[in-house]
Length: 181
Ligand code: AR6
Image (cartoon, rainbow, N blue to C red; front, side, top):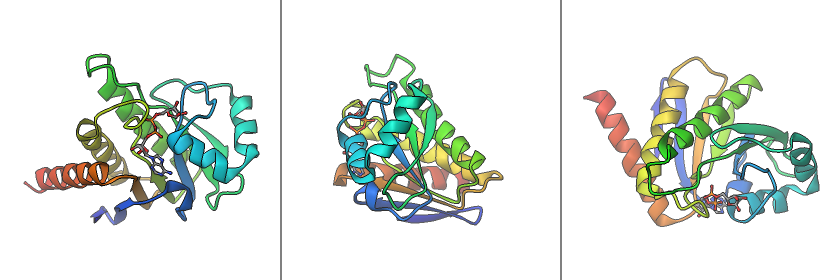
């Protein structure tokens, strides 16, 4: 699925984020930037040890925030390490922290003059955030950001499985319908 937002492209695709041809790939990181499984494991495996060397130098990144390194052997120029919240049932500020992780990633990308960026679905794997609750936050945060003045002209959400892809399509359609209405 693809949408046009103020002349900028927003795409939803299924696949592996490490294979995207974009300026920056967003990692679903932990606050220690220690690496791990899921997207994090795939990015470090594909990008090689230089990314972890830079993560160690950064020392960590708070939940709800995002920190940048170069991208080692990946096709992208940068990896933006975003730290989403662990799902604790929904009453521990998870929604605010998830929105903030997406927004900070976009701000960091904008500061670097990045034009294209790929996101995974933050927090919906090991951190157990339910995709139907996460998708409206992810899509509306990105749509609102790219409506404004920014170097970013293309955002791709790379969704790994059918149910997450469906949740993002539904959320984006609903957000765009509400804006039209
Ligand atoms: N490309 C795109 N999406 C993927 C890929 C991939 N290669 N691999 C998995 N996904 P997760 P989190 C999907 O667990 O929930 C790590 O250990 C996956 O199916 O990667 O934010 C970190 O070190 C799910 O939909 O991230 C942290 O400790 C989504 O990406 C912790 O997990 C996110 O799943 C972060 O957990």
